[in-house]
Amino acid sequence: MKKQSRVRIGAVVGALVVSLTGFQVQSAHAVTELRFAALAGIDGNFKPVIDQWNAANPDIQVKVETLPGGVGEIVKSLSAAALANTAPDIFNNLDTYNDQLADVGFSEDLVKWFGKGTYPLARSNFNAAFLSSYVPINFPKQVTGLPIAADAIVVFYNKTLFTKAGVPFPKKGWTYDQYLDTCVKISKWGAKQKPQIWGNSAGPGGGGNSIWQAQYNPFLHSVGAFTYDRNSNASAIGSPAAINAFTQLLKPWQNGCIPKYSIVSGKTPPTFQGGQVAMEISVRALLPTYRDGLKAKGQDWDVADMPVIKGSVSPYIIGGGSYGLGMSATSTKKEAAWKFISWFYTTKTGGINTLQASGSLVPPTDDGIANGDWRKLPAPPANVDAFASAIKNSFIAPHLPGQSGTVLDDSIRVAVQEVLLKNVSIAKAFKKAEAAVTASIKKELAA
Image 1 (tube, rainbow, N blue to C red):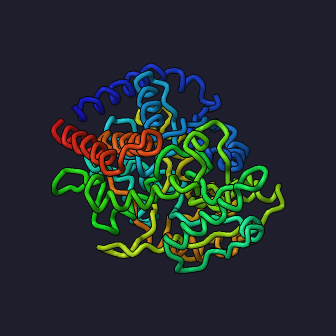
Image 2: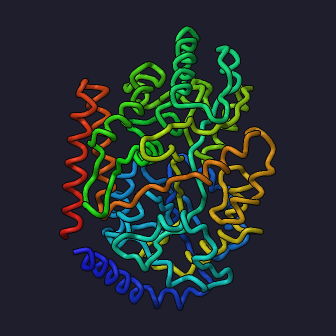
């Protein structure tokens, strides 16, 4: 089934190439237009990169589009675009949906492009752990995306709000219980402020309707639970250990630390960058947004290490991952697309250095992580070591076969909603979620 879907898309590519060959020959001096689908929330980060490229390459112009907000919506949107022959040439791939796109044949295998072009690339250009997210389970010889950033979660915190609330700043080595206590104290103080202020947000960018995988995956790992086990081909998000982990993760949603579910899932949730939330567990990709928003409000901020959780199996490790660049398998402009992608990763003049200079990423290379210019940027944040430490101790999200990743996302979101909106017990909600994910895994492997 999977092979057939890839063949069908390949056949479409062949037909398109044949039909457009004459046009390309007759229009040697025409401008090639590339469509780049970027992740919502960080699409603005790419504006200076695209401007830089377009100014230097008048013959190949890139136009940015914005992908839908959720993982499931992104996968459905891109898959539908491929079937309609309207897929973007370049897109922001993501560690959590790379396998899903590769499985339906959406993503071009970039291995065949390594070593080609003005700026040849190879596997060795990237940190192995972050590159591994773009090697699909079902196609282990392929690489269907290249990481843009080496990312791991840290706690962004508003120093101005902490000071006004009379709450001490987070310290290295603080525990999860101390984090919860800090969050509640700020929320109690914030309830008396106008507008109201909360201790923490529901997720990066303020809005959220579920628990973020960068939080639950390492927490589950530390207590011996898992989203997917390749030996049993099952999920254990409903196991007793996992229930305990999700109980801890849901506390901020239930004790007033995070705004009510109806608020965070609304159109205008309180945001960290808006000065309405004192802490946000997030990644460096959103740093420019935070910096610009809080500067406009005259508020100071910094970052802290994630709180320590001593798991029963292993110490808590930090949720890590990346977003990347991929090429559509149905693109008829692959050479031009690869020219852009390979240029992007040149460290001196490429787009990745432009993003690093803006503060939005740590390069996904061993040298970039250790010695990148991101370490020398002016504060805030001053505590740049928090990013380095998080990356060093990061736990990369496990791969799930085929479309099971979407089922996992959907099932956990539904479980969170049942607990918060319907008062279903955490055990019952996540047992149901576990059954749905395990059934999806087995269905995928049997196909």
